[in-house]
Length: 301
Image 1 (cartoon, rainbow, N blue to C red):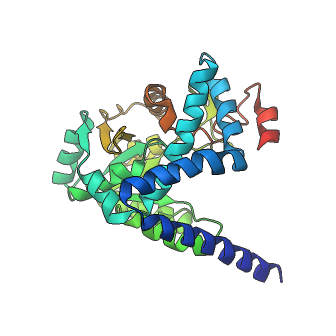
Image 2: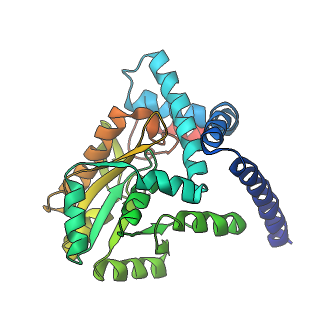
């Protein structure tokens, strides 16, 4: 009985989401993005509690902000998250913008040479700007990036969400033992793999991020060392006109997993401080790592 109730709820929520997406996709691209950004900011963010979570994280990691600057970022974050959702479902239209994105930084030449030589590489990013712009940019140049993803709890939503993400490069590996095994085969085969590095992982070691302790997985650095591949931070930076700049940094030098992991955190921190409104501040990034506000933040979520 409980399973059927869950299925009904999942189907109902997915039907609402599908209807909303279908309606938005009928709008011209720029109108679509602006509409979803407004709804995410003025409807979804306050209803979901996202505004509270964003403020709490900003107060913890960037306490120097004035109230006005903090509130400006709160709105920018919600808008960016709304745009990213709609960009994911905009397929060819968004892919065209990703293909046209300006590419900057020394990592691009390194990755192009690796692809030419048939060598694998790890491209590391965060929930910043739109990492699909990075995948779309490389896909448009014949360099697809395989990624590991986490299955959504709603199986009906998961089906079309994964299909939408696959438009920006395949293969897609579902998180789990089998998916990890297939991802490693892909990497050993000389292909690119993308990793989103900024999620809090329970029981992971503690590293500094934004001046505060944060649990951070060492897996990206460990893979780079084990398979002797370049570890390249890459970011899709959203521009005011809706376009993107793909920033590719120099590969993280191979030293040890601990030093390399901290350098990945430092890389993301630098770009978040440059564009704080483009990072997903809704994550519980600093929870359970010894920060003073952990208990209050847990109750608030």
